[in-house]
Image (cartoon, rainbow, N blue to C red; front, side, top):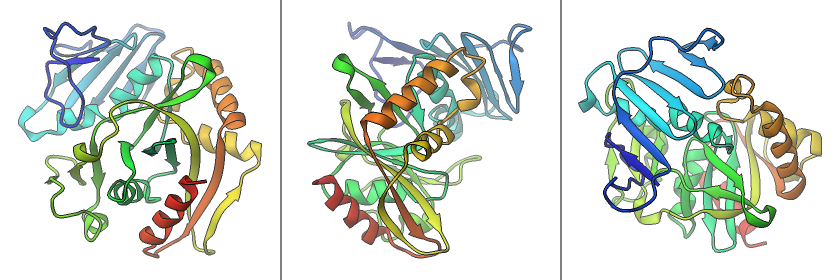
Amino acid sequence: MIDSALTVPGLMIVPSDSGEAIDVSIKIGATPATLRKNAEQGARYQVARDELLLWFDRVAKYHITNGKCITVEPLGDLATGDVAELLLTMPLAGLLLQRGAMVLHSCAVATELGAILIVGRSVSGKSTLAAWLAQRGMKFMSDGFTSVEYGAGGVPYVNPGHNRIRLWDQSAEGILAKDIPVFQPQGILQKISADFSSMFQCERKPLTKVILLDVSVLGRKYFEAVPMEQKIRALTENSYGRQFLKPLGLLEKYETAIKKLCAEVEITSLVREKAKNTVEELGNLILQEAEK
């Protein structure tokens, strides 16, 4: 459960006085100017064993500690929405990594049988496909990145994220039903935000399939088998925030979890042709694949 002093659209928040056990707190306050001396530094981040400091120029700084707390220090106007929206990117992913989850650059949808991950790099079409599938009977679970953890009995589960899907205007046109609330980008954000709360799966689901989505100028390839080495490489390369794993002391454990996942879950490759609008075609193929 999450308690937040910051209004974060699409994130399930539990008031601190609700009586529910709180797992994560989001606070507004001062963040450290720098982490301790042994912190590893990169572009707009510092990371140490149990803490992570991220910042977006003129927007906010985020101090993530022990997988339990995100302290937000606004550097600009809270009213623009950037501070809350950007918290849902790398800051939240960093917190999930600290909590021991696998965090994959993917979208997730679900059927009664379980969750399906659509994994791939930016602009491969993951969000557009997730939006299309959610409007045709599947439940939406996550956009941008997805948290996967092993539960009791060694079963991998997909955790729900937030109930918004971010899309480019041209992708949203012709995809979104007219009754889906849409929020225009503000500040530095460029994508619209579509509210999928009415189609949202708010409880975790067992992971049943992983689809590696790619784009090629050479044509289309549908649901091809993937060699083990390629599976491990694809999920490793599409790990969200993987630059933080080594300084957090999580790299070895994370790599072991990825290999275990690749050995136990069905993973196939789906390649779409570049510059072709194949959302309906690919979406229907995924609907058929989900029933197998």
